Image (tube, rainbow, N blue to C red):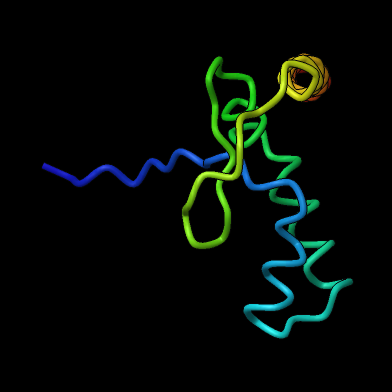
Length: 94
């Protein structure tokens, strides 16, 4: 049997960029670009939409719940991502 390589992203703490910069001494612009790409991912948005989802700090500790407003935004984002994917598949099939 093969081990699962699936991952389930966890919602990150609001302001986690500051934690990353402090912990790694990374450049703020680099952190912003990487987090922007990560947080735009479909799986990350799915993690945000789950009722009771909890945000995590860099050390894994709880940073508070995902708000209803954030959940709603994630659901809207997921619908846009799904529509974009459907359009890509439709144009590829032509």
